[in-house]
Amino acid sequence: MARPFSFDNAAFHFARTDGPPGFLPRYLAAYAVGVIFLAVISFFALQPLFSAYAEMFAMMAQGASERQIENAMSDALIVNLGRISLGYLLMMVIYAGFWSMMESAVLRRYVREEGFRIGWGADEWRMLAVGLIWMVTFIGAYIALVLGMVVLIAPLGGFISDGGGALIGIWMFVVTLTLLFVWLYVAVKLSPAGAMTIRDQKVTFFGAWGASKGRFWPVFGAFVVLGLILYVGILILYLIGAFAVFGTLMGGIDVSSGEADPDQVMALIMSPGILIPVAVLYFAMLLYQGFWQYAWAGVPSLVATTDPRTGGMHDAASTF
Image 1 (cartoon, rainbow, N blue to C red):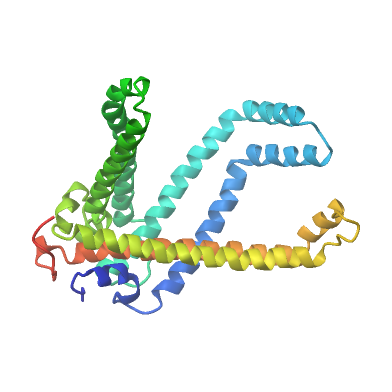
Image 2: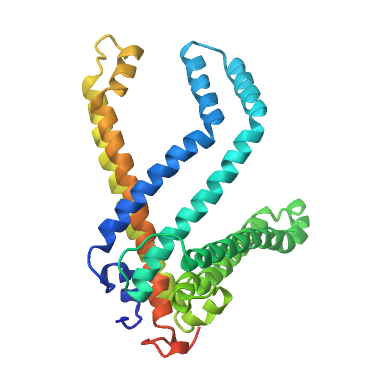
């Protein structure tokens, strides 16, 4: 049963949603397996690129000059430019499909209160369409931002010659913040598009605008608070990993002679005492990346399930 909309419920909907138990562990396990699979496919699809970087590190170890390394990298990339481009295109398609499957599974949990189910069907096709519309919207917004800055700032260029540089700087700051807020406003208003697509079982994008009527500030605040919480989690993971890795390095390097032996440092880096913490940190970051996607989708999902236009529970304000 959908909870009434509020700032608190929106920010922490990921922890309060209903549905069959055991969803999150299954989802994170599938996410980790999927990301590892993507990494393996990426290695083969972009093999010429990885080979070029391996050759670069080998040349650095052999003492090659910076010019020699740059020339070798340029030659390798130019020769394999076509294959590398196709590899990137392939990875974009595969990643889009992976994102669509994961996002659909998460939104089915929030909107329909279903258990974990992953596959490819009508939901995934519709979610892929929503993702493509978002991509086009981002590109259009970026172009509009650049054009807006040019139109609003360029006519004042003459003030610089009259000593008005400070005024131009202030005006640029105000214009940038204003245009950024406009984009954030549009993004927040359209954020329920994916959840509404799952809810209505049809592609919905601009129709999501009215779902957050009267609730912009609580929704925006929920995104900000949730983002800060998730960002703190990333910092904690990085700090734990940094202490583990650098603690091992500092404890194993002999600097009695005044400087570290490069061979000793390399051997220590390749030792289990370093590789195991790095591997654990990498896997933890994969899981946390999946959790971020899961938690982030909770905010627009509550907006969709409490859409005032469909008679859902809501306590929205009457303005903005």
